[in-house]
Structures are given as C-alpha cells and as structure tokens.
Length: 350
Image (tube, rainbow, N blue to C red; front, side, top):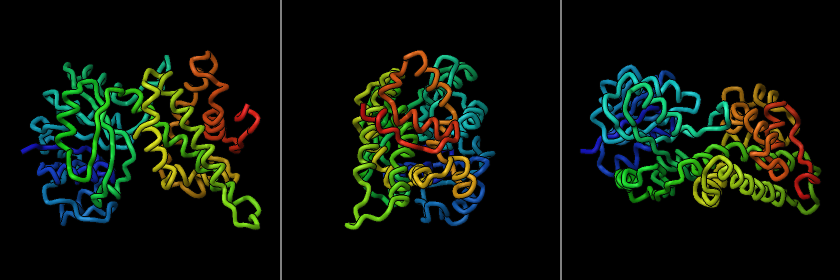
C-alpha cells in the first residue's frame, strides 16, 4: 500500500487526504505544534473542525511529537502543508527524522529574500535538507486554483505539479490521480512558485476595487466597478510574467493554472481579497490588520513585508523594470510604508 505522510494539519494539508484516500493510500496526518485541537478531533472521531467534515478512514492523526511514529522513512511521499512561517520548523522536524531521501511535495507557498535577490521555498528546503542530512531530497511543488474546502468536498480541481525530475513528477501525479483531482506536469519550478506566491500579493490590488466601490457615490443605474477590478487583474498578469522571467522562470507559467488560474480564484474570495477591500476603503494596512483582521494571516501582505526590500533593490539596479510594474510598486508602498493605497493612473497607463 502506498503511504503518504502529511506534515501540517491545516485545511490544505488535510484536504490533500481526499485524493490520496480516493486512490486507496494510507495517510498519516501529522499536526504542527499549532494543530493540537485538530489532531485530537481527527484522532477521536475523524472530524476535521476547520474543514467541517469527517476525513477518510485511511487517515491516521499524530501530534507533531509523533512524527517518528508516523515513520516518514517508509513513506512513498511527504506532503509539506505548513504555513509559510512554519517552513523552518518543518525543515527542523524532517532533519530530526529522515534517514533516506523520501520525496517531498510542497503545498506551502512563499518566497524569501537573499543577499542577491529572491529565492523560492522548494530551493531553500532542498538546500537545507541536503546540507544538514548529507543527501539529496527531491522537493517538488503544487500550484494552481485549489480552495481547500472545495477539494475536501471532492469538487473537481485542476493543479500543476512541478519538479526537476519529471519521472518523479509523473509518479507523484499517478499517486494523486483521483477522479476529481486533475494534475498536469511542469518542469518550471521557479515560474510556478513565483506565480503561486505573488498571486496573493496581487489579489490585494484587485480586491482594492471592492473597497473603492463602497466608497463611491451610488450610481443611478446601480453600476459596479468590474471594469476597475478587471483592469487591475490584467495588470497583475503582466507583472506576474515580468517577475517569473526576472527570477529565472518561464513567463508563460503566468498564463496557466499557477498564474491566471490561481489569481482568479484568490480574487473571488479569501483573506487577501478582504484585505484589499479594506485598503480600498481608505485604511492604512497597519490599521486594517489590527482592527479588522488581527487573527488572520494575510499571505500577500506577509510576502510584501518579507521581500519588499529585495524588490526595491531589484527596481533600483534595473533587474526589474520599475516603469512596467506600477501595481507592485503601489502594493509595496501600501504594505511596507503603510501608505494609503492609491492608483496613479498616469503612471499606470503611460
């Protein structure tokens, strides 16, 4: 029987139990130090309180201290489903446990600033594991429009799985090839990861239109601001392509599931869009966060705070074309400098 260990019992890591279970696999769900209530519930009656449903019978739940009991060394695949802030914690746990190169598939999205620019999470995880374990661990990633609640409800979902070893990517896709989970392969790890991370960032800008609509005087014909949202959405795709190429990926990935697909579903709902609306209402980021979303992780804003200085440096030395990225400039200013988000149309349209 194929065994899959999921590290991180949040909604997305746990939702990935559904295609795995549908394929008849055994799933060992290991919570982080923040997932105690979830693990106790799943261990008791199988019910996942955040997904609001019972997980399949093939799922066995473990506290994070029980990672060794889940025996990842005998697993066929490790799914890394921690938050972006938990990646270092997850690396530490894997280093404590792994004795052989079990493939890792990252659900976690994010980027990190380096001395020379910006690096994707899979590269960081692979490098750290090799440095500390002494052997190579293959690290792949998932991108695409995948809302955890929909996947958990067995709704049809389309994703892309990317890695350097395409034979391993193909085997991984075969492990997850449930009737409702449709994955295609890509070798553009950088491009897929750049799009997957930045879609949250740009959703802040697209969501801004909803707040602007609420601030505007009602139109006599009840007109909305779909024109504005669509224009910002289109600009996001332009800048996603620029970022993917500048960071070493294929700009065409912005046109696929990890780019336009994931940006679309992120703009429909979610924390980043809600924060964008608050910015459109005229709130500074710090005020909006503390007064309305204090308990929420805003991935797009966290990304801006993490790599904003690196973006500024890349604009300054022309590694990124400043004049072609007005939306990213505006979002970085709003999040990193706590400025009121304002669209300078002359800069946007020139």
